[in-house]
Amino acid sequence: MARAHDTDLADRIAVADPDRTVTYRRLADRVGRLAAGFADLGIEPGARVVLQMPNTVAFVETVFALFRLGALPVFGLPAHREAELVGIARAADAVAIVHPGVHQGFDHAALAQSVADRVDTIAHLIPIDRLDEIAAEPRTHAPSNPSDVAFLQLSGGSTGIPKLIPRTHDDYLYSVWRSNEVCGVDADTVYLVVLPVAHNFPMSSPGILGAIYAGGTVVLSPSPAPSVAWPLVERHRATMVGMVPPIARLWTETAERGSAADVSSLQTIQVGGARCPDELARRIGPALGVTLQQVFGMAEGLVCYTRLDDPIDVVTSTQGRPMSPLDQLRLVDEDGEPVSVGRGFLEVQGPYTIRGYWGGASPDSFADDGWYRTGDVVEITDRGDLIVRGRGGDRINRGGEKVSAEQLEEHLLGHDGVRDVIVVAVDDAYLGERTCAYVIAAAPDAPPKLPELRAFARSRGLAEWKLPDIVSVVDAFPETGVGKVSRKRLRELLTAQTAAAEKR
Image 1 (tube, one colour):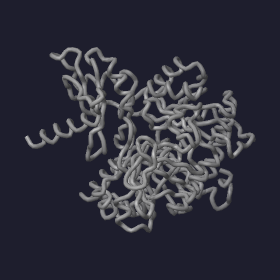
Image 2: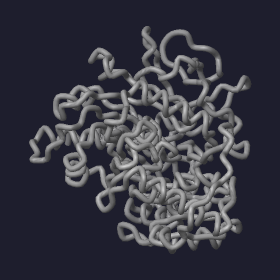
Image 3: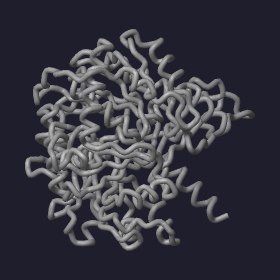
Image 4: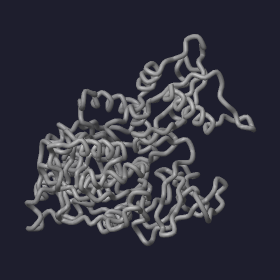
């Protein structure tokens, strides 16, 4: 942010949303005032502050203010509900929550109060519309050590309540800097955010931090829908955007049908968060007049990109290769033994990949020699590009959002009409995967219906994307030879039932 006072940069647009446009000079001033205001509230360096903020200029101002103060943002999502936020706040020993008040018809203020009632460390609930009130005269704050933790990102892991990922200033800056090099980000870049901005992808790959680091412009859209996002592309002449496959499909199909919006300024569309189907990857560039860049990565560290000058077959059929020459990859089987040919579970280490979770959580996520176990099943081509084949374990990748089968099962078992339940993934052309709950009913003559179970899971504080998409009532679960429930067999059953239904 020190560069905001450079003569050539100060009056350029730094960040915009549909309601506000802020120059680098104004952003720097606002950051200083908010940092002082947070300090006056008693928020100290090292304190953790949960952010549950939508895609607005206020998000960027708040994040940089906490950086300036030396406090740690904890990146929640507007879609999180009580079950997630309580676990996140407790794990972080959070002292404050910054929230949007009533947003899209939901009362986040009441939610924040419910969380504070259950988490003793929370002392401050700060609605976005009070940020002006707490702003104070800027003052000097002690600089952070580059190796200090800068913020806590959330893992999409398999335990339901996200694990906290400690990212340091130096490792994250390296990731942003290297992403900018690979993705060609410079002062002319106008980066459009259509995903929730707190996700790691739109934060740093190269994301808002990459654009600001280069002196470019960030434009925040409240929705990924073409009817909302495309007018922002046209107004600000956006050049780059990152999205998940379902959004890419929507944009591609909209462009193929024809649209009056002028999106000709777009140069690069990045697709990540889940594997982009090859048929969709082939259509994106021609439909939208852009270069497709596939992205595969994780908030824990490793980021892979297809390169902007890669052959088209590489761009459409792989998820790229590591962005840093210092990244190290290996494939292992289910027993942890090396795999030299074919697919295997990906393990990584490198200069910006974490060595442990906050508070020592989930030590099994790391091999004995410290390599991070991603849980992803991949193949590596002869030239070093990755082809993502899926996930190990019980995590469902629903349109880029991760669903823990174990967590959803635990909640559904609390329903009086459910005697037992197994949650599995089913392939979906739009979302990649959907969530199916196989239910053994407590009363076979009155099994619970999908709307009932969705409403119940919602009432338990689960985010909307974690609710079941399909409910299938069964008399018993198929078993493996050693008497364990076979999720693989359940997936096969559901696939067969779906295929049979389509033929009828």
